[in-house]
Image (cartoon, rainbow over all chains, first blue to last red; front, side, top):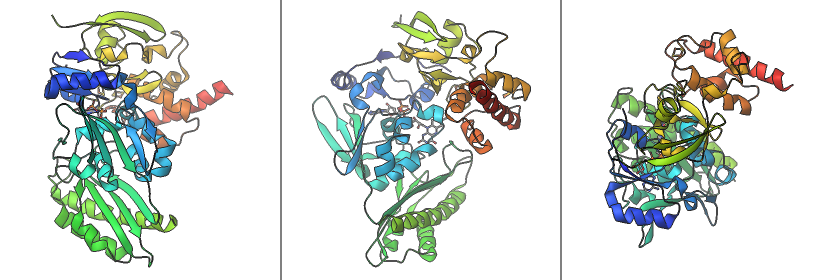
Length: 292
Length: 162
Ligand SMILES: Cc1cc2nc3c(=O)[nH]c(=O)nc-3n(C[C@H](O)[C@H](O)[C@H](O)COP(=O)(O)OP(=O)(O)OC[C@H]3O[C@@H](n4cnc5c(N)ncnc54)[C@H](O)[C@@H]3O)c2cc1C
Ligand code: FES
Ligand code: FES
């Protein structure tokens, strides 16, 4: 099918883009990589009256590391971030997660900001953003603010961005000492949306016990799911197989409520999540030990 | 009457100037406006890979891009691979010799995915080839002959450059 007619704007500066967003509000849909939006328009699930194409706004494509965080402009291609040296060195979790997003052909158009603004619970980047405590820069013609990851995602395909705001930049905190990271998922075919997956972060204290942990899951709820009970239970434990198994059990039974889909029942998603938790924690703690 | 935009796009080395409605998909522009029907349209939502083209040298899905977005850019379609009818691209010869296609519907998208892949990976393993084509669906071959053809193409390309 083909998209319904719409009014098209291709602003060439951030100022002009924000002006258009202010003018059109919710009717003015930003077009980033179009890898989620245009399929939805082809199906006519989405019929925006105005498209604001952000591909000609140079201010939105950049990667830098000013202080303690890798800052990525919202229009940075997923494939650019995938091969970026700063991302690889300072945000290993993000680096490990990106190749799991779709296929190279999609990542050549899809953007980092587009994926986060789309807030698909099955997506990799929201999980990484929540696990690292990333911050989101939202700008309007009048003002700007930084939103914490935990306050950015607001349920299925929803964020707390206001009708006059654009997501312009995301700050991913850089890796910290004694900390290991791991992203892993299971998809039926590489590049498909995963049936289950998670980002794991583990910090080891002076006595080699777990001093901090984070487990965030994809596709098992209305957004990225932060397994708070499972992580609380890990604190103070020795990082061993028994602790990881228990974390997987708690996360999969208490912290998540998967819907299931055509490829996986909710029970299977819980099972996969539990097994992946054990693997991710084992890998992350190995990496934490090596990260001294 | 809806708005139209003048665009100028380089397709297989030729400058094309047209006026397009913004809702025109790039795949439909290539097929219906430029008349190059080698680019196939299967699913129109980015899943099957049949519409893959090179956009500024990189493989992308032309069914989930707008033609207006190609303004000022360089596109290569499957028709741009052979230099003449008797001088096919090495990858095309390899697909012919190793039976890399049956009905041929997926073939243009597979070739446009693999050409840049083989430029970056001179000596790919079978597993790497399978991952490279993971975003392209084929309902005929069972993929084995596509993988064989790709490995043969890598060999041929290395001979050409040696
Ligand atoms: C076959 C296929 C497989 C895929 N598999 C995966 C996968 O496994 N994992 C995954 O995570 N994704 C997957 N995707 C989706 C892909 O990653 C998209 O690129 C991504 O979801 C959206 O990014 P985009 O830049 O294409 O945004 P668009 O599609 O252009 O926009 C998405 C939404 O975000 C809004 N938006 C975009 N940018 C901004 C901004 N700066 N400010 C405010 N709002 C904005 C748009 O208005 C729209 O509502 C897949 C897509 C396809 C076609
Ligand atoms: S037609 Fe474009 S991916 Fe299927
Ligand atoms: S050869 Fe028929 S779909 Fe691939």
